[in-house]
Length: 301
Image (cartoon, rainbow, N blue to C red; front, side, top):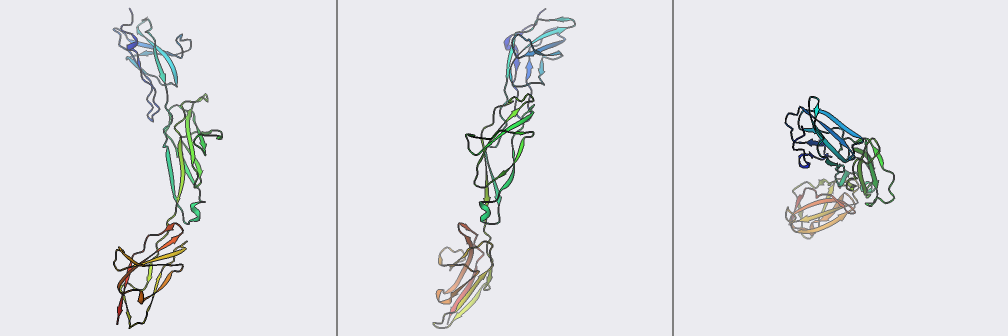
């Protein structure tokens, strides 16, 4: 008796997957009447000189556990007791692993304590990528240009992560691939990723100290009264900007002054009625949020 229905269309095999759950290649064939089991042979050439065999398979499908990338041929025959059929026509399967998945654009943000550290402070970062099944290790390439010109030797990494030190204002380009125990590439290189460090500095907001909120200054005739404004010192503050307005929302600023100290003297002649004021700290391009506002009133006699 012969294997029934073993045509090319009857041989089905899916490809291996590089996803985390890493599905194995699955071979399927049509069932044969009276068959008690099946033998499957897999080889890298059509002569089957060097082959991988699995015997005594009960069902009409088989999951290949020791698979690796490449083009393979396979065939199956039915068995019943000591009787075996002829082998089926050859099936063909190409097992291809995709590259390790990466996050292509990685921007690491680090808060620093001073404007100088924005350009100088480094940071350790653990670079990660998706795992591949059946790899011995990974080869990681690092470069300062996206074309990997004059790059150093690939780094051998046992796990799917690598710790490196990032410098501000320096882009690092990277790509990674899997390697098997025979030291052969098990996958193509991933797409090129870009890793950068951004140091973030924020000026602290000064706190108003005096005068008390709601104080009234009485001005007699043409006499000018001095009003002393003061606020807390802010680290790295080069100057302080003070705004004055007649409304608490500062929709229309009536006066603005700058001081290098934590205080400012204004005169009652510059204002009338109720005046709201607020202050912020500045260091070159870095500015703080505005403080909460206070008000004072000018009453002229």
